[in-house]
Length: 464
Image (cartoon, rainbow, N blue to C red; front, side, top):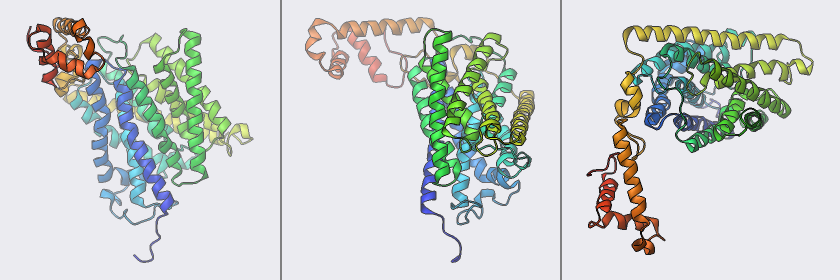
């Protein structure tokens, strides 16, 4: 229509970029989670995050968005959103729906952190489908769509309850239903992946919290600033706590600390001052560190990658801190306890609702299909059995120790051959050296190298 208002170009550009940043967080989560599991489970772990990008996108467009913000089918299949301006914004309804879709995607993906290394992928797909409609959609409406949590005055700027408390609680309940892994103690196989993934999450959180202002304005600036400050402070606090308790700081601890700060500031990023963000980072890091240590000591539930202790606990403490630190309604700013009461009720209700619904979902799925992989598959790794792929060429996909020893011996022979005196002139160029090694057919070891390097996708070398 000629009289329809036009979307603001600046706000639209900012929100489109924010949507892209939040979507990028899900591949970041895949690297973050993937680096912390065993090398024979990394593909399965990453797939559990990435698959939500496809499935939830379809569900959200079909009916998810309409139910989440109107609790009806008015906007099913994005009907009527293309040119309309979303209320209280200067962007189209379609852009608003797309931005919110990226939140739904990563919320579902977060749950996998407590289920990896033992849950059947088919059962996982059924679970996230049911959980999206039964938990995420109602919570989103209650908090952001004008539902009862919104009406009692609770504030959730960017998803403390909707995203982190709901997914963290669901992860804990799901892990309890699955039971513990056969082998819980292991060393994360790729720490650089964890650092890379954590860095991508931190980067993407710019759009996660900043974009929740729904405009390129001073509120977005405040949200981005408090987000960065809380993450940095939480990282420092976690590192200091590690040095005080364990004697040495770790890269994984540093990134986990940053993520805990990001989680804690999420529900209040647009409501607190920069000083409040520093307080949030320190408090969240301390609470989450304590929760992780306690969970490791008690060993009641195998929360594989500390999903509940970081996201569930971090989101909850962040919501409660809003009652103190909110610059307009916080107790520390002279206000009454109304906001604090609403925050406690909203966060607790989100946790209880997600926990009960997730328990029902797992019970229903478990009554009609197996939730967990067989013991042998769990021991051998889920990548080969579940996806017919191996992440690394030198990874033993079958779990065969004899084959692993053969590969180790081959690696030693390769290194010995490539450092031999007759190849000294080629060692200045590593690529040329490897090529020369692989083409000297009169050397038995070179023949093995050539066979190994030309297979490409096979994790085994040919010949003896």
